[in-house]
Length: 320
Image (cartoon, rainbow, N blue to C red; front, side):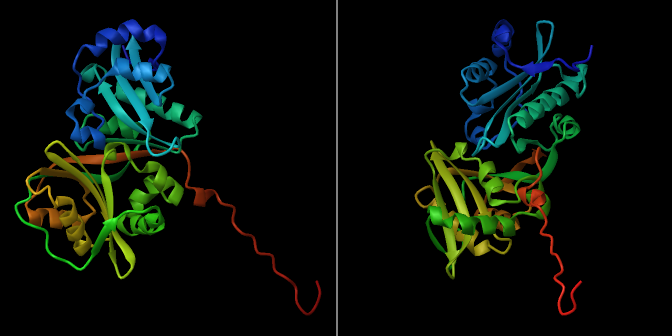
């Protein structure tokens, strides 16, 4: 029996089925930044997600059911705006029995719901070798970039540099968006955000609650942005720097590590961010798991929809 057409948004009628499914531990193939820091975030809580959907608390949930058997579950939440969602739970409980059909159908339902809600982007991060990657492609998701998880307790101090580091302020937003354009490959920008509004909508702020943001400056220009938080004995951070921004990476990392030298540090770093990876390697961190950030763009960039300016020739000197 295939799963085709069996996925739907969670309904109160599914309550009994979800209660039994909620008691079992399932592998969640969706990886979020907040989930990296909190192992409990990577555990699926289908019943909680369904209740949040029914109470209109900003969660959406789709389940794949055959009879009374749950074959799979997907949930999504807003990113930094209601126009962008991220898949934060993706479970295929059927496995090899149904091939790719469960995940493909779940993500298809999620995409259809997002389209109805005027969502422009639906994101999914998963391990590069995850079983969900191929069915996600079938459902319309495209790779934006590949990331590596860098972890460890720093053994060396970052190199000294001339970049100035200070707290991020709202007026830095334009400079950081320009930095995003310099640091992010064109392929990734095409899948993620071409405009400032899209970029802002896709910034994942959930993981940063209780954290801080710093910018690096050189000659009055913003050359780097670091977001970080300290939780228990771990420090999680994210960086955005220009391709030649090694000095900015060192300055930002030194500021993050101040007072946190003995804590474990970890960060997801795009493989295109060579300057960041080099500095992390120099201080003694090690790369481990590799992830792919997938995006289903449900609407074209605003710039692509803008009407072209039509220039009409004006006759001169001789009439028509």
